[in-house]
Picture 1 (spheres, rainbow, N blue to C red):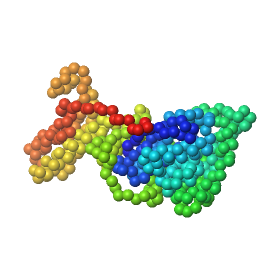
Picture 2 (cartoon, one colour):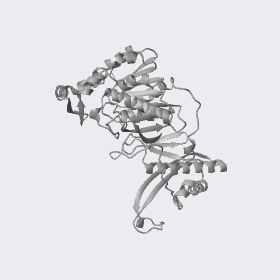
Picture 3 (cartoon, rainbow, N blue to C red):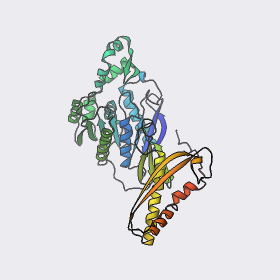
Picture 4 (tube, rainbow, N blue to C red):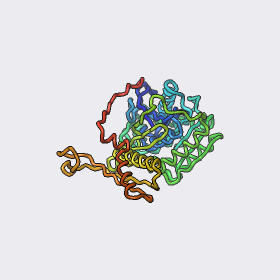
Length: 409
């Protein structure tokens, strides 16, 4: 998965921070993700669902609503209608720069927002909600302790998810006047409702009300055991996989296309938002992840040195297999174990460097097969002829160039 960061003008005219997650090949379709109330585009569910959709060839735009995350504006001046308008503005931006979204996905109140915005994005073919309230007024229960103050003074400081937010009376008035049931009935797109039966923030009865109000085609998937924010990795990945598989049924079918020309020949690495240091790596049609171990990172993939060792190990094993095949040696199986460490130069008898510390890679090669001593010795010599081994021992010139900024970035 590759990512591009940029900004676009939201409903209040202020810049909204956005991230476009792209598959390794030309996108089959574009999707728009709306996050939960007071959350942000980097929320766990948003990041993992976006990644799953890109694996199915779908590009995903996720953004921070006005006054949240990296976006400009004052959250206190927003309401549900402005959130819906932000979704429409994001769809307009996609249409102008790339292609209009065919899929809208919303989590919690973001789910209510995409249901409300769908009729204003004519290209939408499918809408999916995750833990969404049937009526946006459901969020008012979060404000019960401050509602009287808001009504009397016109605004109040409210703590939500451990953070202070300013809520004004216009928010209460606007959210209470939304014709949500009518919008759902006239959705005009395929609908997927995903909800946890144990959701303690937005009860599962909301899913039933949304499902009953909608017309076919409509589907329901129970996220059994998940919490409202899908904080458990397995729950988020299950939801993401089910959503991606469902969405492809309603999106335009296209033949598999090669990687974007601009990325041809490159290994592309970009932040994936799953943890502070999580990375998505695209190598042609192949995808993998990298991360730092806990507690620094999220341990969602091997760390950079692990990947370096993997490259050397794979090259070693392949080189041995090629040689054995060419010489018709009885080599049944190769296993290469590698470990990286830092050692004092004085502890290395064969190293030119004699002071300070240097990197050591310990490589242990297991050769299985009916090989004699001479054949084993020759294979061990061949191991050092692997191209990656040569690269690590050669002078390397790493040319670092800043990519040109995308238009509007």
